[in-house]
Image 1 (spheres, one colour):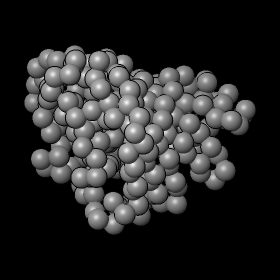
Image 2: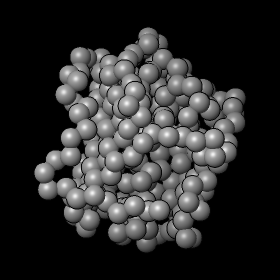
Image 3: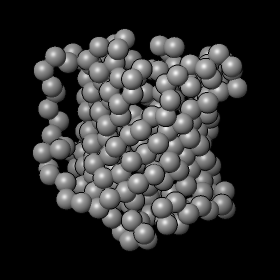
Image 4: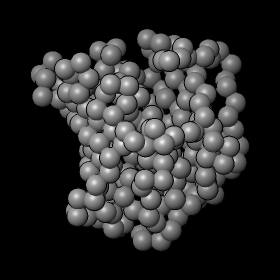
Length: 218
């Protein structure tokens, strides 16, 4: 169960207004997880849906997810400063933080393949174009189908990972992952967007008291 939760946190660290361009506001994204493995599926069902609330303004965003079993996960992205701060308050790991530079290298982009699949979908009245994506990272292959709109200008972990290979924000994602023989399907969808003024203090990258640095995976 611990392994499943950690994989989900990495993938979701992740998570918009009728055909008008929007640069500031609040959005809600729902992630639903399932597996063909009955035992894994039962564990995922216990976790329930993962709801992420994202506050965004220009090139900055704060995404917050809270779940009874996975704990709290906060990700702050600032593409102007090329920085990302991840805060985890997890029942098993405790309070951990990770500071990273947003640096999508040419080598990283070589591990991402994006193909226009010719499909489209309307999400919250936004016309979204469909793409098939394959990402290879640290020995794990993730296959996705995503639906993107260029009317929503939000810099989150889900959008910056594609670098300049994809323009727009993914409003809907279906992700299939297999790690160590454990297959999972994760569906993420933006379910609500509100345009409102967001104070700059929301995006301060201040590490709260009581948090210790997460060990590097390198």
